Amino acid sequence: MSSPMQALYRVFVQPAITTRTRPTTILSISKPLTSTRTFTSSPPRLAAKGPPAKRKQLWDEEIPARRIQLVDPTTEKLQEPQRLRDVLSTIDRKAYRIICVTPPPAGDWSQEWIPTCKLQDKKAAYEAEKAKKKTAQVKQAAEGTKTLELNWAIDTNDLGHRMKRMQDFLAQGKKVEIILARKKGGRKATAEECEELLQKIGLAAEEVKGTKELKKFEGKLAGMGNLTYEGPKP
Image: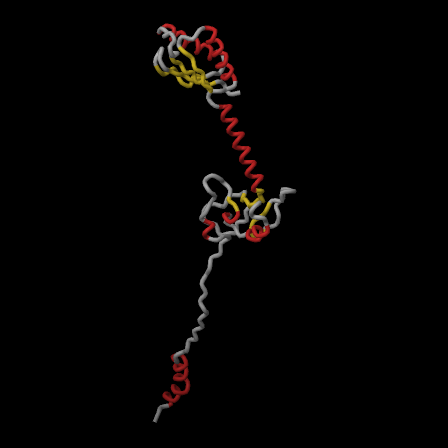
């Protein structure tokens, strides 16, 4: 026979223990795994590219952005952001291009970058660049070094004319290279005459205030030699 204590155990304690120790079924709810995709504002192949070495601006598909803001050519105001591919699909690609006037941000950037862009007429841009190069060439020629050739046995009158030309060039801020040589078939100047000629050239150059001697005489007296002066900048 069971004792009253055992009866109480079976009625009150055992059920409680059984309840605590009963294995529980854990319902595992698994969600389908989805791959995380990182979105960027431009295709990876474009982000790594830049403009060719001869130009600084990005053109058309080179622009690493999904949307752009065009500058209104009439009001010079920014328009609302538009998708780059939509803009490219609406313009005459043979006559026009989209140029990016703001450089891409450096380093890693996660936020969308919306650059400022302009619509450029290809023919007008070509003509403008052509005119710019021509102007630069003219300027370079004007600012280039002028050369004067003298022979060591030059007569006083001829030397006066050459020195006047040198002073005119120096007064314009130009560089003047003076080449000294013996005239073929002419008289050979003495060492004293050569020294005197160099002195006269130096004195004539000094008359133009601010003139610098960039290169002292190099060469052989009565032979081939040269020296260079530079006039003051206007």
